[in-house]
Image 1 (cartoon, rainbow, N blue to C red):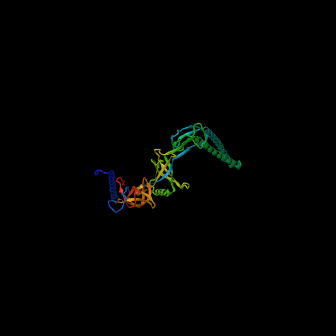
Image 2 (image 1 turned 135 degrees about the vertical axis):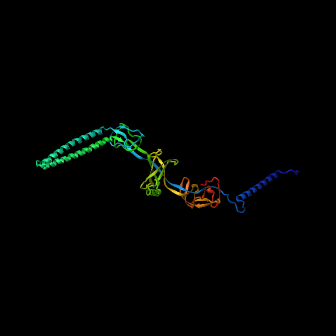
Image 3 (image 1 turned 90 degrees about the vertical axis):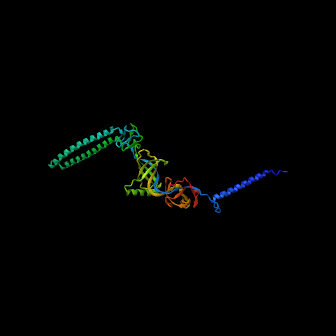
Length: 392
């Protein structure tokens, strides 16, 4: 027989199962109490999700137009020879800065000096003949007045004198041309700037028809940037230019030059001009800006990102760009009221600058919009605003 004081092992297992069932039921009722906020009969609903909000503010917002541009020097001159001859001397070093009129090179001047001497000799000869013709014409004038010679002789002498006068004038022009050729044997700098690499060496024979020239002069301070904008931006730019034409006291439109990664601003300049037509092939318009480039951050043929400040929106309502959502009905934001209830508000967006979006219509300054946690929200839902929310 079994001792009555002894318990079967199966009794312990049954008690364990009962304990687990009781604990599960208790946990269920506790969970139900929390999700219904202690109000039985309302059914199960979600907890108030945590969100971050930001305050819509009114501020002046710059409206930039971005375009890809190329740096070009304000002066770009290829120095070439105007005469043919042997290059006997160079008076510059590569990379040197020069001023207008500085002597750069010399061509052998002896052939041009000989041509000038020849022209001077011909001029002296013809001047002597002209002087003699003048004297003969004066004698013939006295003789014809006394009827000692025929009038035809006098007219012939006068025509010969006019012929010598024309010859002297031609000789004078020849002397000027020969002297000019001699001056061309000395090649001065036609503009101020910095010299590049030379294309010829002393002793070479050079010609005026050479396309490479001797050296190139470029002026990099100041320099220009030619950039393009979409044709849809043309009215905005032209409106800003016309506004300044009617008000000379207004400063010119500022233009910023940024590197290719748009991480560093290279220089700040002003808009010079706009092209008079739109490129039909690309649908863009060209603009030119002038930059001082005092720190030599811009270099010819360098690609940069140009930012033209077309206008400044005064007292515009702005919100963080992350707060603006796009749906089937357009742009909208979630607005959180004083009772922590999120409401959907349709908005009309403007430009976006530096992580901020301008709201043209829909909300005003002082309204708090949801910036983080939007994916968990529905219209009219109660939310929990986190403590580290940025309220600006």
